[in-house]
Image (tube, rainbow, N blue to C red):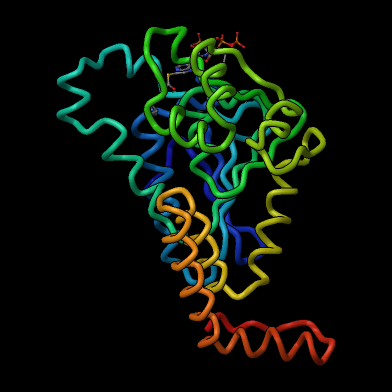
Length: 259
Ligand code: CO8
């Protein structure tokens, strides 16, 4: 697929880097842009040498939400019939490799929700997160009332979604929305460093951990704990488990084979 709205690169032969690239529209998440992101993620998922993906909007803005020009012409029937969002964003929820969001500037509406769809979010000091849909007569549609609530709790989610007010990087960290604040201009490199650290681990184990943490959102505690236990036992069938533990006991670095 030829990309018009994103830039796709490989870093260190094991990291996929996707940069949203509609600077004039503050990376507004139009349908063609999201289709490109999904396609790029699918390609990285299928590429054995890629262990983790970094998603960024570059150094100025992450994404200012859905494309309001596109939204303005949608009515209920066309949104429902065309499976708006459902059709194009589903792939983003299904991937197995970790995705790290590197946020600078605005992450608003669908942009904030896109960062919540990622597995780890880090930002720099310029970041501003918000769910301003209420100000334009609509509401979050891809997780802003669900993932955000689970991430930050009811009261803060209500505050963000009902007032449309933005929060800055420090508030986002206090809220638990981001794992780390980078210095300005360094968030993409920091995200790549995190991705490289993950890439040095056993990839089947990384995928089992990601799946297990995501289960915490989808199931009861007992069901989640049982599934975690089974995945834990499953790691005992991996050569990488033997290698990892032997390496520790022999005081050397583990050399994982991803099997
Ligand atoms: N859609 C389309 N164009 C946008 C958007 C957007 N969301 N945001 C900014 N732009 C465009 C502006 O129209 C402007 O273009 P132009 O220069 O051609 O007039 C350019 O980007 C720069 O914007 P501003 O001049 O407004 O820049 P400011 O620095 O003054 O303000 C803001 C920046 C605060 C980000 C402001 O642009 C803004 O408020 N944008 C809208 C934010 C918003 O309401 N987002 C929510 C959208 S609805 C949504 O996300 C629903 C989510 C659920 C569905 C997800 C499916 C994708």
